[in-house]
Image 1 (cartoon, rainbow, N blue to C red):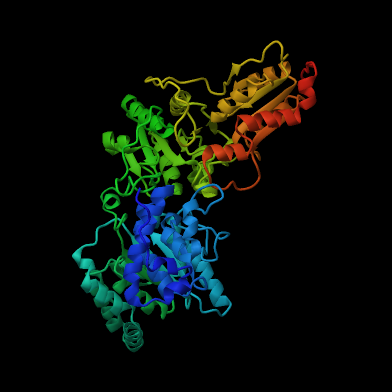
Image 2 (cartoon, rainbow, N blue to C red):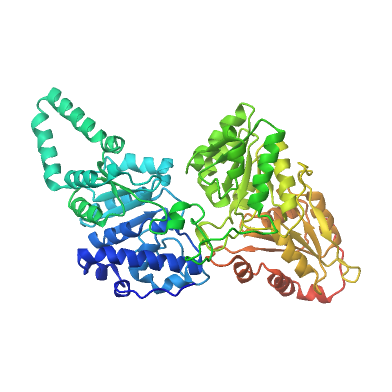
Length: 638
């Protein structure tokens, strides 16, 4: 890779205050430098690229016009904030982006006073910014609150709930910026719209509009006629009527890469009170031809050479996501009742092939997890077999719907939970480490944790044929390279199996109860001098009580291992079952602690939390040191 080219302006910018000292004419070359730095920085670390290339000018303009951090900017979704981070004193820290001990790939309040609100799950910005604006009003402060929301995030109901609330909030300094990056910038968004945007955001236009309403309010027919003429005239050039119905003053659309349009428009809006809505059109990957041509490929790349581009990755081991995508197509071919549902995660959930082969049975509902789950429930009521492909961390947003609309009615909906466990660089907001706890406490749920790719496919088939709600929870990335059968074989529900027996020399001292892919470090730990029995438990709910009872009868101590928080997780299920069966066999529960785990490489995070082979062995030795030195004592049920 070529070294970073020499910079002229960017090294001078350590805070937005430095940015605001520049002349307007210097902003365009600064934006060019910023984009080049961002491209080469992400290429050296990996991270989100396309979306960040598209927000360079917007970040420059917002920090140039508004007095941050006094004025609050809430970025939604948070993976479009790299330019913002670079401009707010984190330029040198970008070399540690998304790495253990480094800066986050998302806004984080603990990281910088310029990160007004932590965002990573989408569509929260308008609600948060409105709260900040109302707080400023109540304190008599004149600061502004700005929500920058992507067009995809506007598909979520929460965004419209916030718009509905904000539209009646009078005298607040609230600006919603819609970053519309789903279309190319056409000539209609050029000079004419720049002029209209500046006109409609100007004080004269707003004052004249207000005065006209005051004069005409005594003549209702004329007022209504004037309103209709205004809406019709604006509707011919801008799609803003809907937002004005919410009570916002709509401006745009304007070119989000044109600083000569952005800055004067933002300056005009800064002088207005009440809820304002600015529609800017940007292009994902802007300024880097390869990302413009394929923004999906360059959405979240790993390390690459920007002068060469991303090569096609090949791996001998399929990812769990690929296993799911292949299974979905195979099961769809076998059963015409199957439909696939995703909340705007077609690529991430492995549904590209399914959409291509079964377009009439593929439903992308947008960033609307709540709707996705209840939509699936409605389909299930009519004999359809829905499969909801959703990240573990995003299912949290639809918990009420999962309980009331699916589980309470015992409807046969399959939840394919991708990204279960620690996910690495995306960090605390994306770790899927609560699902075993919040799923197993729901009546009627079946919860499965495959330990390899082959078992994952079998569990998906098992879930599909189960006459009730079932979740298959699998991790991000590739598995161990286990064979994946082409058949649609099922397995018995609620049955685990012993995959390693302790030797006669060990005398049945320790048995490890492994849930999910942590089976493999558990096996490595068991193969040491500990010489433990290892069971692949497979099901968190229903738990294999017969297997648990047998292991408690024949071993002196049990150890549960899970990539989930300890509170309420699989180990808790084992402890509760042992108590019900009146066993006093000691149980060591290994899992994730009662705190949010930061970002970092997956294996490093496992090691840091004591869930790799060495950590599991060390925990067992620390807890059962005396037991491992003594002959075995058989304990029976009480």
